[in-house]
Length: 300
Length: 300
Image (tube, rainbow over all chains, first blue to last red):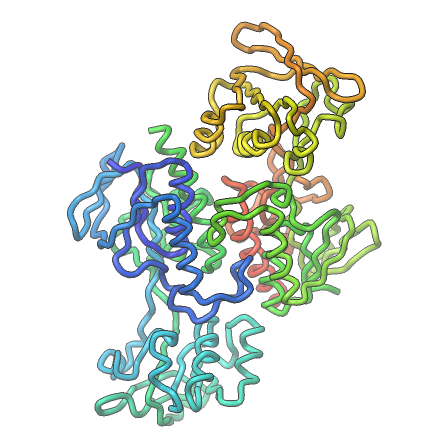
């Protein structure tokens, strides 16, 4: 019987692990893929206080080392279901059942698909959701970035250093990204904005060759020749396995103590309803979730 | 007219500064004393993810450098009052009035006094609220620590490396500190626990010589010979100047977006009602407060 099982090894989960181990909770962190979460795929992070500029991967390595320094137990497995047994929870996983007094869900979120013809067909053949992973394959080629938020524009800037030309297609006529990022993108010579455009189809043979775009202002269509399409139109929370109260998009609803609708089950980081999803906020969430979980364990 | 004035230069305020400057807000951070806040007075911090062990001062230096890297304007002055003028706020300070569209209150908290006879008389002559500041004056002497929470026990451990003997007087018969810290204190040979004891008087001549304690279990009194008394029984929020909704202890009430009862005024960090007060949580608060302040500025 564990005191605490943390589901997810991104910034929120690893921070919860640090706090839980310092509080001497018998803790297991489980992760179905690689540690670090979405941020580990980010080229550079410049707004986690204390590190003016570091790669997402490098920062997550530091988090992992920090947590392992407190002997946090980490297992690679997938959680399929959590059954509330009152005083304990039964966590059903790909490797069998686990018993624990408390659970922190810190499973983050995954990229959202456009749903355009050709998108799924060309995944791994030109369609990508991670510039850091796939950018280097498009050196001196023309690529399209879809989206207008922080991630889309940051990744476009990153790609502009590798590709010959980067188009950004955004459905609105202004960006949602942080202004400092916007300015950087708009002043980058090989980035071209396609305002009020949506992607209608991705075409090609062995790999992507063209993207078909529609102009929402005049309904005109246009084709651009690109070999890569990078899609950053948002993320969906990884919360299908969790039967706690959620909002219409699947994000877990918590109070300020990270408590969900089920006692002893907490949520932290990108997977919960929160005004902002950053390493900074995930860290705050993870610390609170572990602190409140420890209080719960002492009381049960 | 500023877009944002951040009041307080601790972890929450400096993080808000980083986010606000990245969002291109015309931002001023004001601090009435030294930057860094309470944490800058802490010997070692081991639970801010990414830094397995660093001095509070050293970490806050990194935060300050990070914020100054984005050209955050910082002024030393004291805020006396904030007047809500609707679309803008008038911030009355020791150096005159300032106009701003939004305010983030990140003023933290200050130590609580016991109120025992001799306490105020001997401040700076043996009575202290900061072991890092004053500990070195008590080398090879006997000292008393009052309190049972994280700060009290951590500071007692720190003092045990300097002083000959460290008593910890705590009103309860168990500590509230994190278990890892408790274990460390209880296994330190020159730390002696005085369970269920409160301090009744501090006596001395030029400096502290004795502490008079009462045992709450049997009402007996005892005197111990100490030259230092370090008091860590909690903190009060620095919020007297702010006329927003607060709880009975003076902590500012916010929602999860750090919004107070007055539109355009936000609170972040130790000064607000929150389940946990740590650098980790202050950082999350500061990021959210600046992000929501920026949205507010765009809308007004």
